[in-house]
Image 1 (cartoon, rainbow, N blue to C red):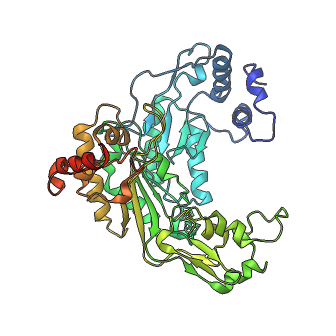
Image 2 (cartoon, rainbow, N blue to C red):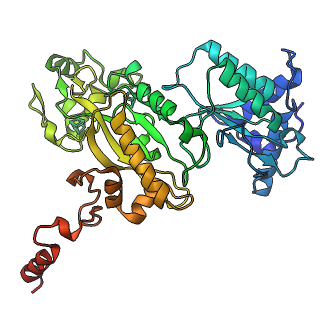
Length: 437
Ligand code: SF4
Ligand code: SF4
């Protein structure tokens, strides 16, 4: 029997989609029965009280969570997000309800044994509710009390060889796609890059010393399965600088209907005969493909690596052989100054162990941002405030036409007078003479 009436939450269970309300109710019911005989270390009715406090928030149109001070584990400045309820008498089960971020394995591979062990820790010492995975990429343990934090941390680090992730003004848990472990589009080893940088930057991950959060994300190709271009301050996106490899026989097999386009992903519906002209060539954003009825040709110089043609015909078109990555900086979600996509810093770089070139760039950026960044200013905001040129100076990268995001309206690169032979004044006078009579 539910402890609180939750008519508004109950409505969220209707409709075709899975509902978090049903999940919480399921955990509440399991705890009420306790068939496994677990000696719960936090109030067993916390999922019930969680539903109750959420219903109250919906009724009143305001949150009942408050920040009540910093909580964490000894020696770490991040990884735990303190949550306290402002109605502890009514909802004692969630009086403290701290979230723990756990560093996910690169590519998010698990054994079932490991998952069971994680769940066993959390059933005993937390609410039993998890979020797999949070938007940063971490495994998120939702809701425990302050005395349980060290206990959970001990179990994770000593028995599961796992660490806490980042939170606050520090390096957030780096994230990557599964890359070369399963995907033929991967242009570099995302998992090794992610794991290496996570281990090398432990101090930055656990001891907040930055103006605000900083995220690295590693996408193996421009399909962007971890959306690094939209969500990370330092985005590494796999690419190639030679040609897309074409298997003409396989192209003919797609055209002839022997191979299913999009790897058969839309096979459940009759889309009609595959039309390479309409479905591939005409959809190329840079208009660099042509099909003469027999042969597919690509003008690779104009290809912008959108991945469309490779996704439609993966058996016929393959990424080039000269592989590496593009580096983009400054993406962020809309918290302060609106959402921002990352800007291109390096068009192509080889991404190889021990990743020294990447680290040199990252550390140059950190030095500038830590010196100049205001409190709670993301890298992307500093880039906007001081200009892209300052990022180039901080990283020692030369300006390149490919960095220009919007020609004419926002050239994004500011030249110094001494960079222009003869001085820019001469050029502006020349321009005036010609055009402003
Ligand atoms: Fe594959 Fe590219 Fe997705 Fe990585 S980002 S999993 S390489 S499609
Ligand atoms: Fe055109 Fe995109 Fe294919 Fe490049 S990857 S050839 S831009 S469709």
